[in-house]
Length: 147
Image (cartoon, helix red, strand yellow):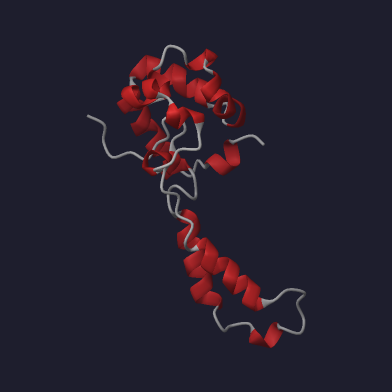
């Protein structure tokens, strides 16, 4: 039985994403609260609009990622794969390394290859526990993904 982890079928652990774990919305909310009506005196000395800053922060406060497992109309090829849905994770699929549906993830998040090897060694549940501990220690997908 899978505990309530936030993960992508593709092998990415969403709790390491600042959008997936709610960090962005939390920080934007805090910054919005702290800066609201605080800088009207500076309008004439900055080259941006504080109204636009507030709009941007308001937008960020609403950007919680629903997680790919909750998307009703999947855009990702992995989410369209019946085998992946059946397995609960591509990391359990023997075709992962050669599957074209995971090419994007292997390219952008090359660490998923290590995740695959780790799952083969310790199992999916234990892998999730390790990834959650990494997230708690500050590992962020934003810092370790490739562009």
